[in-house]
Length: 164
Length: 293
Image 1 (spheres, rainbow over the protein chains, first blue to last red):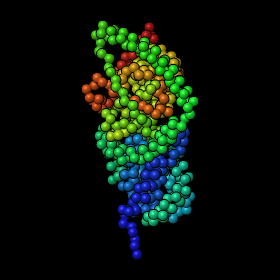
Image 2: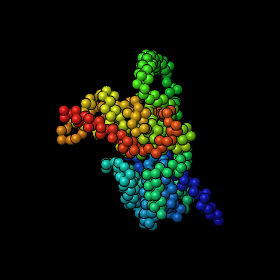
Image 3: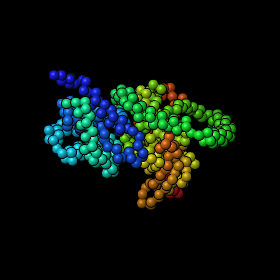
Image 4: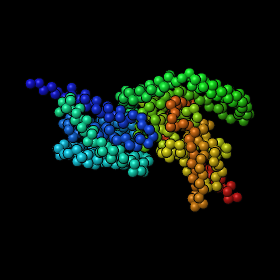
């Protein structure tokens, strides 16, 4: 019985999902729509932390955050910090979250995404000029709303490539 | 661990700018991703350009020819004025005018953090781009380079809330500072006194103070003045002249008088403000004296 799961070969689809998330987060949108764009990379990270906690963890979150920092032109370490924190919390909560119904997962994700935005806002506040509008939390809400659909797609990907 | 590491990196990136090696490495890593996003959009634009009909092209050709004619006429007088200016400068024994060199760069069609007014261009350190280099477009000042990476650079627009640019009012030579508001097409001039002589429609040009932006480039036009007697300063708003929203080609400016343009690397926007503040205070004092007389 083959169990073809030596880690390396299965890393590719995971990296691919992160790359797609990065692409989605920089595709040019119109001036107004930009504020509605969910944090695709954060969603992706939370998903993998919940469903693949032994492969994706705090350090992966940190590395992905660093790349996100560079690609969005923010302060180097800003996303890295926020992503490590939400990766840590999602891993702590993964045993419960994994078995929740989709809407309850979405609520969990909402909390994580809001925490992510708050951390980012806090860093912006320390280093310069924080955006003083509640619009800043919008991506978190949009992210939670699309979570059921997103998780569904990701589960399909996961089963297709039988990533465990 | 990761948290401490991130905080350390942030502190270094914010204060010392010593992370440029890391940033450059990462930027090379993500360049393919950016290009993947940039290419289809650029391609579709190219397609539209190439599929435009003959009549449109003829029309465009006509307007361009008319425009060239107009510019040629302007050029003739400019040459005469330049000669005169040189003669006068020689008479006054003043320093010779600084020459500037420009290079065209293309905007990468990618979105960045919507709360920071930044764009990314396809020229980097390998093309001689340096931190704090001034960026203009065909109409006026666009911003300055914040990070010069190997093959791409980040540009902070003049409308970013953390950006300030030393300007002077073209009509009265009054020097002041224009800061970004976070809104595209709005700049704010917070340091003009209530009895200011500014009028709506006045042109703002770079003053050259602070050493980042070469003098004389148009920045914006005054669009709103609100004077309230209770406040020490008037509320003056301006609109940038550069087409910040829909520009595709940008120009990088080098000043030829500098031995090595990288000498300027230690400047940051904050230094820029500090450098030009004394001048500004002087101006305001003299203005206030005038007002009290």
